[in-house]
Length: 361
Image (cartoon, rainbow, N blue to C red; front, side):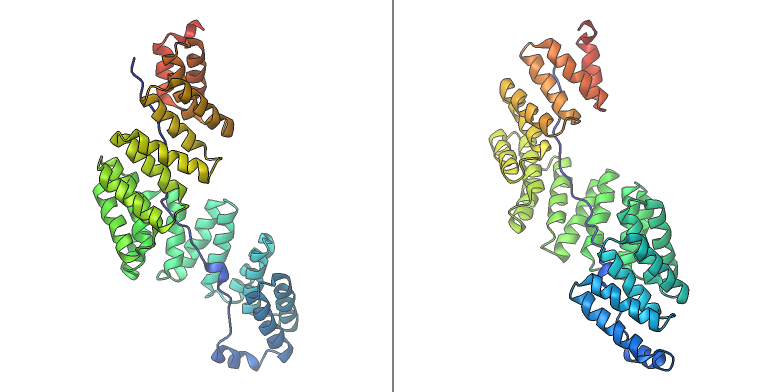
């Protein structure tokens, strides 16, 4: 029975470039004038020294100076906020959260503090709390692009595509030149199998920002899924031209060449991926897939062995190695590999295990 060989395409959908934790709060002259009547000079001095320390990336000193400012003036909201940023930079997450909460308590209009708490929970992989706090920040200011963008990333990760689309559509309305939003909306359309819409958005992203390599890569993947291999390869070429070390684009270009029937070209790309990233198991599996097409079954086995050594839980590699063993008439080993692949969630492997009467082994 003819088997379907499985390759893996490496997609790059979202950038996740939230930058809120770098936005130190500097007092404006009007804010300073308003505070001077109630804030002692030593608080102002320590606060300004904290800003200098933070901007110099001396975060422990920044914490010390902001603490001095707070000790001199207990209701110094911005000192709490900036100390929270300093704690966050030091990966002192609980202290940072406490400071941001205090800043928001002192000034409920400080929605940036809520956003920063959301970022910390996102870093902790606590998506529920991340969405809560970022959502609260958006309620306070629904025109802030970075808030909407970060929430769209979290919603995408949760596969709540319609909600993520709402945020991305709003971002594009607020800032039509925000290329990342088009890239990410295209990725949602791709997940929804709306490939023409995805292609339109990826093309818009690279029109706005020709240097956005991930959008070129994603455009290539959308073209490949439509069977437009030359266009796909051209898009991957553009991504690689921007970054010669972009191994994901080499992997994906190899995939497109494989589907086009250019096996030598595919092997060259997968070999380049392995040269750049020797621990990338997907490239070994994909290389083995080419060997299967070329009927080089021993080479396929050896290459799958390397993929499995790098990732013993890699179901596709067991699946493809099972095909190679079957073609080498090693039925027992092929059945063992398909059994393992099925155990790891590769549905096709379970069918092959049954159809080849593997229960006899």
